[in-house]
Amino acid sequence: MNNKAVIIGAGFGSLSCAVTLAAKGWKVTVLERQARPGGKLQRVTAQGYTFDRGPSTITMPHVFRSLYELAGAEMEEFVELYELEPRTRNVFADGHVVDLSGDSAFMREQIAAYSAHDADRYGEFMAEAELLYRLSEKQFLNRLLLSWKDKLSPPLVRDLLRVRPFLSLHSLLQRYFRHPHTLAMLGRYATYVGSSPYQSPAIFAMLGHVEAKLGVYGVKGGTYKLVEGLVALARRLGVEIVTETEVTAIAVAGGKAEGVETSRGFYPAQTVIAGGDVLSVSRLLLPESARRTMSNRKIAGYEPSLSGLVTLAGVKRKYRQLLHHTVFFPEQYEPEFTAIFGKRRPPQNPAVYVCYSGYSEPGMAPEDGSNLFILANAPYLDNGCDWSTETEVYGRRITDTLKGFGIGGLEQAEVLQRYTPQHIAADTLAHRGAIYGISSNSVRQTFFRPANRSREVQGLWYVGGTTHPGGGTPVVSLSGRLVGEHIAGGG
Image (cartoon, rainbow, N blue to C red; front, side):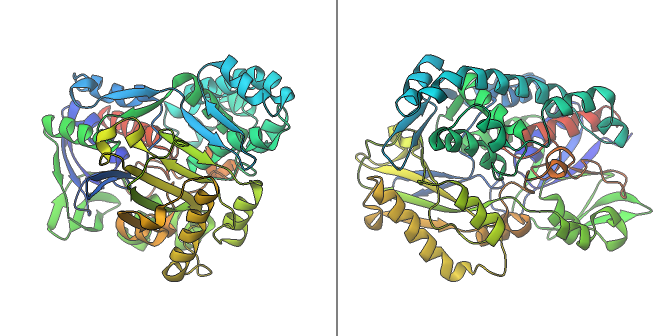
């Protein structure tokens, strides 16, 4: 057997797959078009401020730990995590604040300040969230679904029905809660996979358990340290990581992968793993004859996930309102998703998320300064939204929203950079600038995502947020490990 693989891209799915294969004796080369590994997660430094441009809320640390254990190493040798308590601050338009906590009594006390009814039902909801997580962990997160036999197995179908696939997250929440604050705070979990709480299935209520009970974590030195840790581990195992190298085509002969053409020449391999967006890889790197199941028409049939407008602000002041993670909610939440998925326009009153890692680590910003990663959801790229003009308009709208919550002075920031859906598409080849691959706004796109194994090309595999098991940093990492284990096991 030829135990040699080429992996396209160096995001979390790719690095996880590389570590898994290398730990099992494979010779692995990772090719990344950007100057540094990390995919959508990159480090930005300017004038003493350090930012992580990309994923910032880290959950399910056991997923990352397992990769190090697989390689016979300890994660603490490479990266240090610390648990955040409270996990996230939720600030509402009327001034109420709920600091998400693992302490259920504290949660009920905070919720009772605006709704005694919702406080009373919180415990029941959390029990359901845990059940949904356990079912997801058992049937979806830790196994590949490579055939219809896998997807239609009686145990999976039984448990799929138990997670109420045709009930939306918002509808499930309404069975427990009445107040708009609680519905928005817990409905926001759909955005973790780039979707709408009013359309995505109820399964994502499990993230209530993931965050409150399994914990939300910071990474010492910034979230990019997770990338650096996996890169160091991969290289220790003999993985070759080549940056600033554009893959221009996947070579296919007789229905089999033969390697990849790149800006630096040809890399031969009978096993090719594509770590980028499945839709972009199919459209840009495969010949038409090798993508019957991913034709342009079928690609157009997938709804992309949310994108976002990111603002990196280095400000010479402190903000008492901010924790490590803070979310500011508008008076009404649903119009945001109507604008993004219905009209494909930036919303007028978006929820705004701020990651202030300097809250936990003062060294991430100069003394008396704040390093703010600010994210507001935005539509995927569409002809109706011109980001050459929309960036300033929407950026000012976000700044004004924060000012209304007391987070002012951003206009005088020492560092101010904006990162748009167009930048995301250009840097990472994300299909239509979507952050999370395809949305999970339907049963099909949630539970039956594009396959990890190509149907047309023997030896071609996919990892990342567009394929199974889905989006989000730990889940994308799981996809890489699952594929790596299957390939190394002779699959």
